[in-house]
Every structure is written in C-alpha cells, then in structure tokens.
Image (cartoon, rainbow, N blue to C red; front, side, top):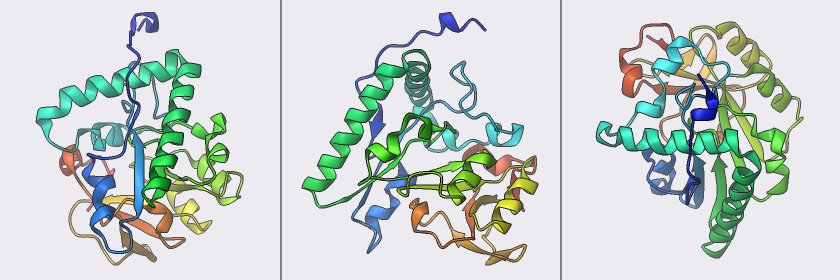
Length: 242
C-alpha cells in the first residue's frame, strides 16, 4: 500500500468528552460522577493504512470494541477515526499541537465545573503516547489506557512513567503467558469473558470492568473482567474466554 495516497483533512476536533456509553458510565455512579473523561478514538489495527496496534492478535483485531455500538453509525465512525489516525501519522507536530490544546481546554473546563479531569488517548488504539511527554505536561490530568504491549506495562510497574498514568494489560489468544507474568508481577490484566464474570480466575480476584471505565481506581493485582460486546460475542479464537 502506497501511504502517500492515504489522504486526510485536518479535523476540527480530535477528542470527545461525551457520547461514549462505556466512558460515560461513571457519570451516573454516586461517588464517581465528578470524573470527566476526554477520549481520543483512532482507527484500530491497520484500518487506516497504518498499524496503531502493534501487538494485536487476529482475535482482538476481529473482535475490537471499535465495532461496538449502533451499526448505523459505523461508517461515519470509521471515516472520522481513519482521518484522525492519518493526521497523527502524516503531520505529527500539528496533531500533537492540537492534542495539547484540547487537553488544556479539558483541564480548564473541569476546573471551572469542579470536575476531575481524566483522559484516555488509546480508546481504540495502542500507541506509546508517553514518547511525546504528554503525561508530565499535564500533571493535573489522570491518564489511563489498556495495552497489549508487555514492555509498556513493565515500565509502568517499575514506575518509569509519570504517576498520573495508569496501564492495564489486555489478554488475547496469543499473549496469555505475558498476561499471567504481569499478574505475578503485581499488574492488572483485562480479560473478556463470554457470559457471566467469575468471582476469581486462576487464583486472582475478578473485578467488574463494565461498571465503569476508570481503571486507575481498580485495586492492584486483579483481573478486570469484561463481557463480550459487538463482534467479540461470536469470537472463538481464544480471545474471549468461556
């Protein structure tokens, strides 16, 4: 594929504060309603022509939460996320300048409304945004992500990242050894279950990750249980556990 032909237009907006059922859940939970999440959605896997999920397995690529939600809006979501991803890949400096401005605006908005600012930059991607020094630039914002890149989690566990960044490892059908090594090291691992969430799995406590998306509030060294959604409901690759 000739990446020179992957055109984009500069979007008016990169991030969104409302409109995602998963990241909006805490608004209706007593004690968590003050947290306000700003999210960045890019086009997952290589949908944009660029690979933004370097450790994606066949199972997670097929069952990605990118497809969750009303299918009527999927084409529109695809176009927007593809455009933002190409913007990041082709005009990195301008993308980051715009991202910094939107994070600053989010911080100001939360301060004015007495809210706690939170940001999830990898809502549908797995980019190492720490290389851009974003987290240390905004110490008052709590950042968090899921990742399938083991070395990122080990750096997090070794406190090599800013203290306002939280990482949860995600299990798929090809990284189970990494996942349980991370659990042994004290990290948290997200696992998708087909039906009901168990209370424990392989000796580790399972917390309900569907109640809200504020992963930095989870206890340490637990499994974050998620019920299969979207295309994940029909996955039998091993990404979704029975």
